[in-house]
View 1 (tube, rainbow, N blue to C red):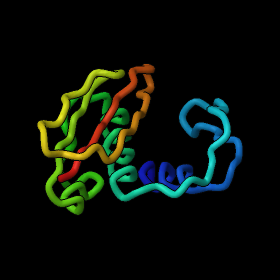
View 2: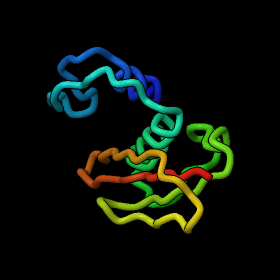
View 3: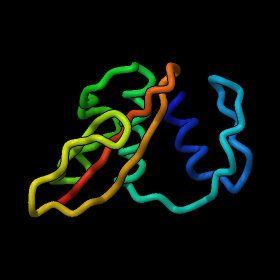
View 4: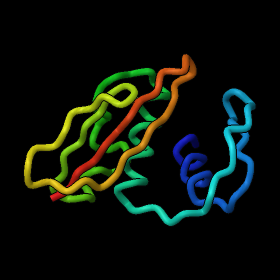
Length: 110
């Protein structure tokens, strides 16, 4: 349900986004087309934040294998692992846990 809600928010027209957890207005959401890599990164960041876990989500979360050869960096705030040479940056996403900790997922592809 949270994944569906996150995808709906990402693809909705510009409107106020009332957070279902805290009830706050987190600002306008624009209807920008998102890439598959962006959607996968957001779903995986949401998974980490919802569980308050600083670890790579299972491959089944967000179907990351659909991207082919990839490198994923996960972290808190702005700190994540960086891909080795030969990978092209594809997406970044963040999600905040209930405690306010911000989780980040970055994805690179070949």
